[in-house]
Length: 211
Image (cartoon, rainbow, N blue to C red):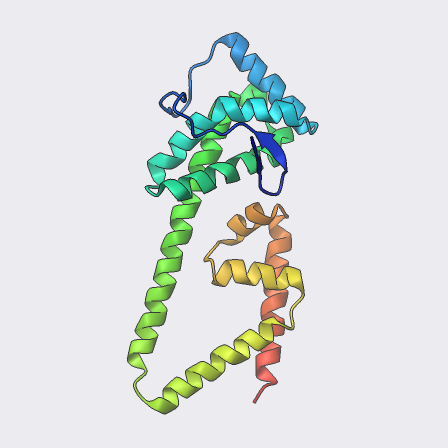
């Protein structure tokens, strides 16, 4: 037994030899489909045992979907846990009239995996841009100016409130979009945009005041 981070919900380990080959949307009997929907409703009410049952049933398929997108098993395991954190948080929003629990979980898994790929690509692109800039800097005085700008930016970040600093770091260091940040922090999209806008204004003001 172990607990999903940030939830403290005990679940059975999913990486076991007994797990069947993952599929996009497992085929369940009508009765089983109803049981999964009932468990998800209990999860929405905070039932940890129902969540553990749901995890055991869906983890093989969820991991399979994520693994098809991500080649790194360690990343796939991490994203799988993120998927179940989202299922725990969003259980009340599930609409049984629009589809099955298994399909809903797999759609979440695919979206999370794609988001991870995009974030990794953004991270690589950002490092390549920084490398290109550094390659163009040849004069010692240019290196000094660039280092000074970085130090000023870091000092300016310390003047922000924790929520503002968090969204800016996710946006500029992790390369996440506004929608991804809202999803990651479980806050409204409008709140994320406001924090980023206000944070940038404070950073610019702080850097402008340093000479």
